[in-house]
Structures are given as structure tokens and as C-alpha cells.
Image (tube, rainbow, N blue to C red; front, side, top):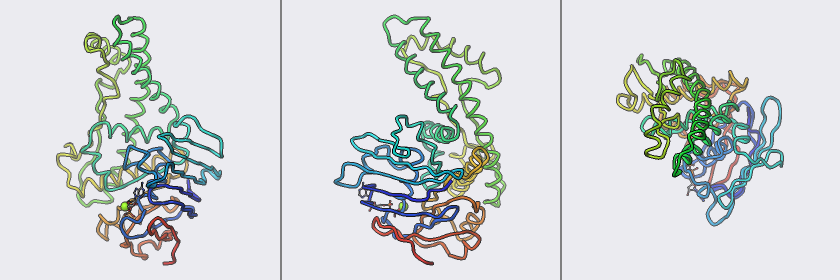
Length: 364
Ligand SMILES: Nc1ncnc2c1ncn2[C@@H]1O[C@H](COP(=O)(O)OP(=O)(O)O)[C@@H](O)[C@H]1O
Ligand SMILES: [Mg+2]
């Protein structure tokens, strides 16, 4: 998958910017600090996820003193051209695919599949379970329509069930109907989450051992409230057991909306044992593994966004990283200028200068 061109209006520090990108190449976004490199990465990420990785509020993405932003892009995927547009104003997003409005976010997310690695990703291990669930959900939403619709349905049923529990008199038939639907949804979601995580870790281990000399064994355990063997029976029993408590406190206490992922190294939680360097190698390996999974499932690579990664790695690791990047993948790398042109000799690469919200291709 490639992003062929991008147009920004009032997005962060870009009042009006247009840029053409080369397919299957590494695009180096070079510039001093605070010029708009990460902002550009953020706009591509936004096209893919309909959210920023830096802020939950869309309004902070609007250029100061303006009342809307627009991101427009031409995408090439499976030899087909796609045209996408997002206009955000008054806390609402308007989405277009070839000028046809798209109503549901889930129909838009995943048309562009971008994978990001940035320094804040190291927080994945420290942050709340919600962030780790979101990580796995975002990735599955982009690659599985069935996952997306089941997750949406589960969330709707959970809301319904909670509102039934809040009523003065709880209707037992309604409650059972909701519970049963939640059980069926969770069987699908749990199986997909667990199998995705297994696949992800198997591939992550291969990348991890490429980056590090030490031989730590990295892995991840999916943590849920039941054992995975006989899911349907276990789920039914768990909800039966929890019913009294749910009625008493008027809410649903158990479900996949509370699950977590325990990332570990040699069997011990990453947040307890890993150094910054080990965490970085772990997440980086995971992101590369993700690209591999997407390639296997969709028969094309996602767009890889590497923000501020090279400033944190020593020269040897930078070269190692570049040499393992697939040549058929479109990649954006931000840098203040510490990437040696010789490191890129095996790739098609070019440089775009980012200066105060303006983009210009430069010869290197
Ligand atoms: N909504 C906004 N309106 C105008 N400028 C913004 C907005 N959000 C961020 N900026 C500006 O963008 C710049 C930071 O851009 P960024 O892409 O993060 O820099 P870098 O090139 O270091 O990655 C800062 O100068 C910041 O003030
Ligand atoms: Mg930056």
C-alpha cells in the first residue's frame, strides 16, 4: 500500500500543504525541531485510525485561529487508486471516499493501513490495560471486518445490559438475552485476540533476536477472566456466578472490556525487568512483526511510520533497522539529520525537507 499524495489544510502547523510521495520507497522527513515532521506523520496516522496518537481531541489538531482541518490523500492499494478525505469541524468528522460521504467510522478505518513506531510506544508496558486493549483492538479492526462488527455489537450489548441492571425491576428474560449475546460475541473476540497475539509474538521473537545480542525470551500472555479451554461453558458459568453481584451493584463486572496483556521477558513482566533499550527493541520488533502479519493477511505491506526513532538508536542499530526494512514497503522516517545516506544504499530513498509547515523535496 502506498500513499501517493497528501493535501493538508489547517492541520497543526500546516495551513496549506501538498506533497507527492514515491511508492515503495523510504521517505526521509528531515528538519529541525518543531517544524512539522511529527505533524505530517500524525496526519497519515489519522487517515488510518481516525484518531491521533498524541491527543484524544481532534480540535487541537486544527491550526490556531481556524475552525476546521482537512486531510486529503490519494492511496494506491492492490493496484487500485483510492481517494480519501477527512474534514473535521465543530467536533465532528466528515469522511469521504471518492467524494461519497462515509457515515460509519468503521467503514473508513483500515482503507489506509499505517503502522507507527514512536518513542511514546515504550509506555505501552506502563500504561493502563485500556491502552494495551486499544493496541490490539486497533490492529484487529484494521484487518478484520468480523472483529470490528463483533466488537461494536459487544459494546452495544454491554451498554444495554448495564441499563437493564440499572432499572428498578430487572427483567430476567431481557438480562439473559443480553448476556447470551455478549457470550457469543466474546467467544469470537477472545479467539481472535489470542490467536493474533500468538502470531504477533512468534514473529516478534524473530525480530527481537535480530536486534539484541542477549537471548532474552520475549512473549505476551493474554489475561482474561476465564480459562480458554471450553469457552462457552466457562463464560456461562462466570456470568451465572456474577449475576447476584451485577444486580446488587447495577453493572456488569466481567467481560473482555476488562482484559489485559502481560508482556514478559524471560517470564517476568516487562515493566518490572526491562531496560529502556530492551523495551525499545521489544516494541520495535512488535511493530515490524505487525507489518509482517498485515502482509500475510492482506498481501501487501502497510505504510510504516517511524517517528524520532533514529535519534534514540546508536549508528549500528540504525543501520541494522534500515537493512531489515522490506524494500517493497513505503516508509516515512523523521530525522533532524542523523541518517547517513550510505545506510540507505539498498533502498529507494529520497528526502523531503520540513520547514515551518512547508514541504520541499531536496536532492541528497
Ligand atoms: N494546532 C496547532 N496550530 C498551530 N501550530 C501547531 C498546532 N499544533 C502544533 N503546532 C506546532 O507544530 C510544531 C511542532 O510540530 P512537530 O511536527 O511536533 O515538530 P517536529 O518537526 O519536531 O516533529 C510546534 O511549533 C507547534 O507549536
Ligand atoms: Mg517530532
